[in-house]
Image (cartoon, rainbow, N blue to C red; front, side, top):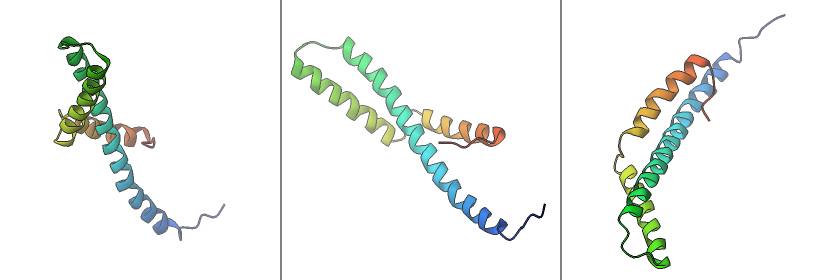
Length: 100
């Protein structure tokens, strides 16, 4: 069987293009996960501090929780997203698996 190495530079270029895309997808997924965790934590906080249990208050409360979680993640978060980003690429490279 004869193997042509003529396509090797094209494959390397294609892999180089995919690396930034995978890193960006990993970063987005890590931030989304951190936001989801924050929303769960903040919604627990909201439940413990409710004074009025009307439907309107409940709806606005969940909107506030979502907005707070998004703002926290947007300003750097708790560091969970960075830890996920640092951990996952190493594991996927070791196992030879694709992230995403």
